[in-house]
Each structure stands twice: as C-alpha cells, then as structure tokens.
Image (cartoon, rainbow, N blue to C red; front, side):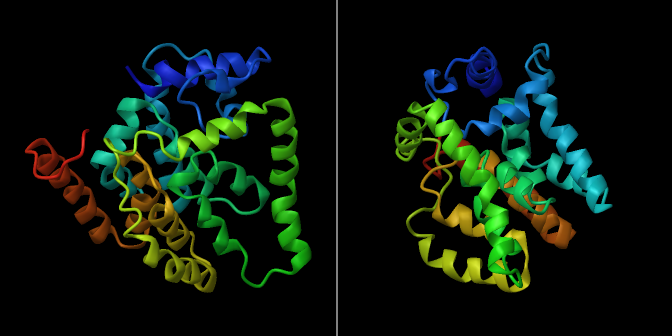
Length: 247
C-alpha cells in the first residue's frame, strides 16, 4: 500500500472537511502541504503514484535538460518515491523557485531539502529577507492555532522509525553541514542547502534523495548517472544483508 493510500489521502480528506490531518498517525508534514495536495484528492487509485513523474517532467522542462528524466527517473530513490506516492517531488519543485513560495514547497518534506532557502539570502537587504520569511511565519501561526496537535506530531517525528528504514548518516554527517551551508550562501546554489539538510536530518527514507539527485544531475549528468546506478548497487547490498537497512 502506498503512503498516499495509507496516509495522505485520509489526512487530506480530514483537512478539507475541517478536521485535523494530524489525527492520522504518521502525518508529520506542515499543514500547507495539504493545500498543495488539495487538487489531487479525488484522483483514482494509482494516479497519485504518477505525480512524481509529472513533477520530474516539468522540472526537466524548466531546466531545459530532458536527460534529467531518464537519469533521475530510473534511479532507485525515484522508483521508491513513485511506488510509495510520497511527496519529495514538492521539495524538488521548491528548488526551482524563488521567494516566499519556495519556502512553502521546500518545507513540505523538511528533511529532503528545507535549507535550500539559504541560497536566496546573499546580497539581500534585511527588509527583503524579512519579506521572504514573513508569509510562512504568519501562515505557521495561523495553522498552529487551528491545529495545536501539529506541534506534538512534529516532535514525535524526530524519533520516528529511525532504527529501521533510515538512510540518514546522522549524526556522523553533522560536520559536513556547516561548510555546505556556507557554499549554499556563497554560491547562491540550492544544491548545497539540500545536501546540508540531508546531513542534519536524523531520519529520512531513500526517496528524500530525489531533490539532491536532480540538482546534481542538472549540473553534471555523468555524476548524476553514476549516482543513479550506485543507488541500485545500494539496493543489492541491502537485499544481500551487507547493509543493515530495511527497504
């Protein structure tokens, strides 16, 4: 059963009917996630699994690099994203945009790339920076009043499922985060912000690599292709029991 069927569809139904989506166990995404998902609530079975592919085609078109479709689309992280109908494609789209709207997209799955926003801070006045964050702060305050259980759900997510299906290298990856954030700021490059996020996130599943893989392949298709192939080598090692992670 996909995450869409198991989690998001019910949570979205709750959201649209005025109930708290956090009444669904396993929902940790911020409330504005369901605003983005609202147009897809009535999609019949299996069609939500195609949303990552639609997002990838759009993102490749936006970058004018069609080769991103086979490189990213044939990787194991993208296969997992499609199979589970999860939402990391929203973060991928967030890396393509600028301004306050990008923050809403990037934070739908914070562990997949929320710190990409650092790439937007260089050379900005304090007034511009405040205007960047003001909308998401105000919307957060509104939803905190509407859904007080959002906080407890988010705190629970910190320790969720970390012992099994966890592809994070946390805490060993923490030392890499600061130089990556500096590069994100200095070079105004969201890729480094995404990589820093992955270094600081205590837990994520393999499909959270998709935004990073997309940005890497966009800059260097050979490296992106190599990482896509390597992702299937990783699957083989997991299946063989060499790496103690559950798929």
